[in-house]
Structures are given as C-alpha cells and as structure tokens.
Image (cartoon, rainbow, N blue to C red):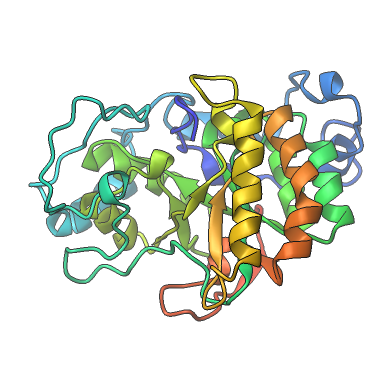
Length: 339
C-alpha cells in the first residue's frame, strides 16, 4: 500500500450510486469506460450522486473517525468494543514506518508485519487468508485503485476474461466514482483497507459498509500488512475476513531506494520460477500488486501472459475462506465478497 492510502471512509458509497443509462458521457459508467485518452480520463468531473452523499462520511483523504452525529455507528462501536483487546496498541505509523518499534520476539499480538503471523493468538478469531488452497492457483488482485487512467488496464483484463480483487481506497472512490463503478460492469470484486487506533480502525471499516443494502462485505486487507489481533478483532466483529499476501512484487516501490523496474521484473519471474519448480504443487499463492499508476498496471499486463502460462488458474482472493469453502460472489456497487 502507498503511504496516504489508508482512508476508506467512503469506500462503499457506490452502492447508492445507480448509473443512469440515459445520462450524457461522464455521468455513467459506460461513458466513462469508453474514454481512451488517459489525460481525459483523469480530468476531474462532478457526479451528483456521490457529491450529495459526501457529507454523511468522514473527510476524505483523512483518517476516519466515528461521526459525532452518527448514533448508529456509535451504538455499534459500543456493542463490540468490549471484545477488542485494550492491551494491544498501534505499532509504527500509518504510513508503514516501523523503524522505532520495540516489540517482543514472542510475537504476542500475531503482528503480520513482524513475523508474517496469520494464525491469531486471540481466541475466536479466524486465520488470515495468506495463500490459495487450490494447488497451482494464483490469487489475483490489485491494491490502491481506482486509478483514474485504468481503462486500458481494465480493457485488457476483460479481453483475457480475467477477474481480479480490487482493494479500492475510499477517497479514490469519492474522487473517481465512475471508475469504481466499472468494477461492477466488469465483474471484479472489492475488499477494504484499514489500520489506526481501535475506534478509528472501526470507523474506517464501518463506513465502508454504511450504505450497503442487503449485503455484507466479507473481506479486507491491511495496508503494509499491518495487522494484529486488535485489528482482526474489529474486522471480525464486522464480519470481515483478513486477506494478506505471500509474495510482494514491490511494484509500488519502483524508482525508490534500491527498488528498480528490474527488481520488480525479477520478483515476477521468481514467482513464475517457484510455480514451475513445484513450490505451489500443494497450495496456491497470493502476490501483492497494484493499480496505483501506469507503471504498475502496464507491468501487470506485461507479465500476465507468462503468469497465465505458468499457473493452472487465477482467481479472485475472496473466493477462499479460512475453511477453504467458496463465498457467494454477486454484483453490487462493485463485485465484492459478501454472503
């Protein structure tokens, strides 16, 4: 996840945004999806259904908090806060800096960022989804969308009949609502993101499902993999399954530090080499990739044919629950995981 990508307060606003098929271009998903010029795609527009709802959500591009006038959210938090451990505190920063964190080597909080722990130590919590149970299968997904210029990327996925899990950022959804609606038309699924203190983490997750009618989202992913049993307890109380990853493409880091485009290519190739060498003969895997910018999307398209040739199958991530059963996937504000 990118620093600054944590606000998901308005994430599921799209449920209430029903496109008008008779509307002019840039007022419906089909019109927006037909734009092929990236600069035109990324020109801001006004979309009344989202603009009229924005006041019912915490401020976009800011960490969410429970609204003082939202009695329903306040009551929900009060009903679950007794099950949230108070001895587990946030670690590091919301931008993924854990440099000055002091933490026990025994990993008492099952903190994934420390030791990739996926089996919670707090009783009653399900294990994270960190791999794919089907042998030779790649869990296929992209973080940090919707990107305003993603039409070429989504066109490519459609041409390959490939569905993916899109871990959308709520503030991006507010900025680019029609781009987010394209996930509905294309049949992709969406999960959510959060970290922060307990009450703020609750708000981040809660407001992603505020406007969902008749369905309950069932999956989420922590930015930077920053999840411990405190956050898992909050997510679990809201019915959300934690989804992690096993391999990192580091595509979002390309051009920073010692991460080059060659590094990213090598990470993709290493994943393919592991597949061909039999590493995934008993269970599949999940690789972290992004919809972040033109480079990450272009790189995903460049490597897709080789991934497709190497793996026996690729699947959306929420297809796998901790019990290895299939979740029911239907079209909602996007294609997302819910019962």
